[in-house]
Length: 413
Image (cartoon, rainbow, N blue to C red; front, side, top):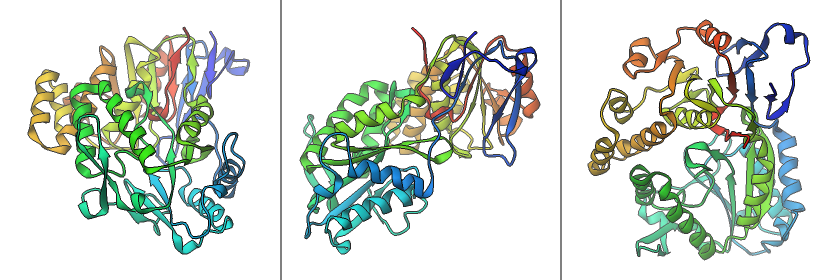
């Protein structure tokens, strides 16, 4: 049976052909988890592309911004005297090296360093301590830019509206729950008011993927109204590295990034009975678990087992818990959406997509969560790595997904 290793299909030709194939899983613990899998059973061993760090990552960004495949380089987007805002939407791979390189390119084009500011929206990013943080719950930091198709006002960060030039920086990534497209790395609702983010989460809780079309329309409208023509999209490599950088218009950079991210969307020849998943962060919430399960569900049988391995995992919220304890999903959705509690709505989004992906599949957790908590969720409890090893040795077909929350695998048609 063909095997996919690091996204590339091949047939095993090694001494393990007559024995077991050893796979190392890094999951945030001091030592990796070593699994021995029958080579005949290993249908996929999936991981993202190798990437660069430090100066090598900076060179990737410099190459993308100075010689893009279509359109002008970054230096042509600003002239001396312009007020430039580098808008960082969410997390970035290798953030200090990326931002420093973009800043250097602007200064080299004649822009006064005093006229360049870095505005960051989202959770704190290591290495961006000097960046100005955008506070979506502070109305004074936003300005009215227009209205959506329903007539609702759209406010965005005032700094972006007042800038002469906005350079957008965002990661391009997959989210298997959303059919591939990730909300990360976009200006909207990252640089909108807090109520805009809450409205999007409410629509996702109520409507699932159908909420994506209005969101995409708002992203396009706001990008056009802000006049953003300089966009840097970053594709992460495995283990927090930078695999690729794409620069151009928002659409052009996205097209380039999608091509560069092909290793995160590998094809697999056969569905597996068991998927073993690690997560991209050593400390993870159940949001990442739901993404990993959605990815694994795409290449496993409807009755498969999905084992998630995490060093530190937060316990799920009350909506996930009540659903797993037998409460019907739709009444839970209606109750949470009517509550006005943003944390319950966010937990409902996780529950909705977890339910969609899981179907009749079984989840097994190897994590810091205690046995009672896991069994209360009707999940399988793995007491140690040996438990996962036994699952792998007994399964007729196994898929291993490294950093599964970032993967978007597909079965070969």
